[in-house]
Length: 245
Image (cartoon, rainbow, N blue to C red; front, side, top):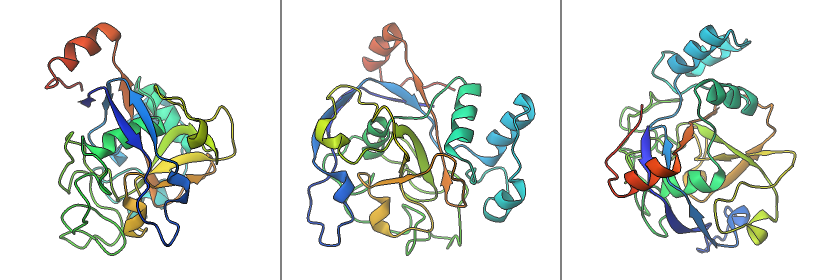
């Protein structure tokens, strides 16, 4: 895992949006997050398989998974929000909040569309129209594209990533500044990052999507985060080269 330093950023986007892609990403608002650890890549098929076998977790969609993620190095797909949460609990981690996810995806950059800047090229992401140097038809093995400024891979494209938050249409209007965790209830959970099946606009760091928590499909996966104890957090913020397995 990679330590993401604490910081304050402007969450959302107020750039020109004639097609309405970013309607859910407004208004822009100031958010502060504590430091935390985040998985460098999306959770892989191999990692999820170990969880299923070790925890005797009931999972019946392996045949579907194999069509889109043929080896253990591919991102796990066909996982519901509940599956992702169960894995995270087993691994002594959790799903990221939407604010943590966007802050980490930005990689320390300010007001950029993607985790690396404002332009998207085939060496940066696996999305519709930008399939990568090897022209991945569906998902790509994790870590095939250049990481962002924090060292995180595939924060744009490959598979959507579940976040912990419930979606609320007006949450951005009333979001707390410090460590927001989303609405207390809802029908949908937040998805971030875009996927191999989606247009480049959906790969933007501020783009918000949502789905029913029981949904499981070929273009959705997840990655986990882990809290840092306060004393360790202070120490590592003064020496940000630390990481955790």
